[in-house]
Length: 618
Image 1 (tube, rainbow, N blue to C red):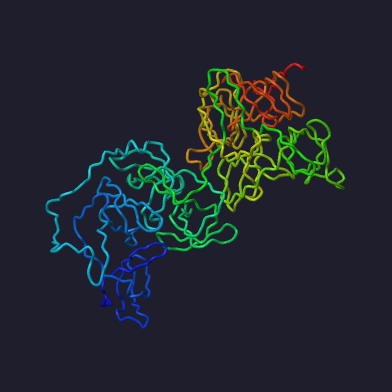
Image 2: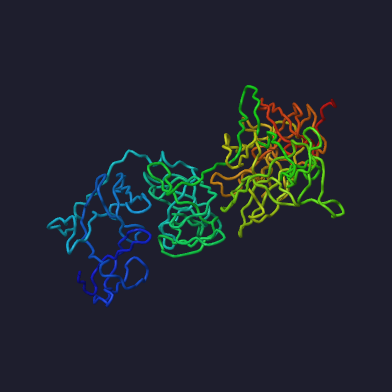
């Protein structure tokens, strides 16, 4: 048994959740009956405990000026807490290394030379492999030699001005946490000035700006969404104090809550699922995850930049009519005035002719409330009940959802994430914002060609970001807008002409400009609604709601809702099931829409709304 003396510098082995040696000092060297000695840890704040003497080894002597090559076995000072075994994967600039940790998890970390040492184990009183003999204990200060490893990477090419990134802070109280920021400018070969998106300066008047080393900057990780709970020992990032802290799950509780251990502080805290994300490592220009997760993307699949006429089907619920049988539970769409686009659960009572059914609603009742409401429904307005998706993580900004409201499901967009698992949802059919609890929402799904398609799994092909210019005619009178006014803002960007986006006036800026916040467009980091300046001539009041209870006609001028905005077009053809094909002259394209995604076109002229003429009655 190894003998130690009081005051000896040692290292103590811990094996949960991974193998690590913590620096410590012997306080009582005489072992107890259980073979334990009393130590104080050097890197774990004021922590003292009895440990098995077999889990203690001397602190190895420091080896000066030791450099490594790819493949060397090393120990790294992990999170400045303790030493973990790894293998050198790559040599970086500024005497830094990329090291793959060899125990559970296959984690890869970036470390400086002074935080790494040759891997050795303590075997019966000696180090294996043995230490070099006659290690000179001298200081080489007079020559002022600096060894730098030349690397071909140019950080300025990796991080550009305006790029959204995450920055690791090493300040007291937030060591190792990652915070969203934007690159302001480069301030040297490997340093950048960044502006944080959540952290405020001391005076709380503006966002904090500070210099950050390139080695502490990484791109924002891709969003990973999963329909499954986290598991024991899953590596996660926990959202605390406006930043992401690396942690691991140590206990799975009920109600999608977890006990999480923070790696930098070893604190154990309880988090709800929505405040965690799967941990990812940025390695050699790629994101690496600990285990497989579902990775769906966001919605939309329309390109409006074609010069040739294209006919495409928009993913808006075009149905491949299934066979409906008596007693089958379904959802029925309403196009009645005030309820357009909402879906209600019902049961098929009987078939009453070709493509028509008698349905009985499960949540709607007759006027006298005496019995469930029954009515006729066209097959094109009926769909199977969508599969249940248990959404345990939080909904994201501008995610398309169905909201349970007035006994039915209404499609909308998440426009604000509130505390306490609540959200503000924007409904474009009524230009309203309402508050909903998490469990009164569901991910929006479309019934397309006989299959259910989740809205956030449809791959986007365009990123809509209007570039606002002055209006070229059409509005003769300038309008003054008050703070909080609901408006629409026009985009004149090539390929998006004629599209209008709902917004609110934040404040006037003078010189006929306004600061406004969009209701359906978000910032690059997807954390907030987009706010920007706009010329008064590109802004108009939100048009009055005109319900269209009867069908649109061919040649009717309409606005079609797509990608968070209203696009001016003309009805080409009326299809069955309250669907239409619409021609967009600015893009020279024809797309298919359902009735609830269209509104009659109106023009804002000389301070008044003028309805467009309707097509002829066929």
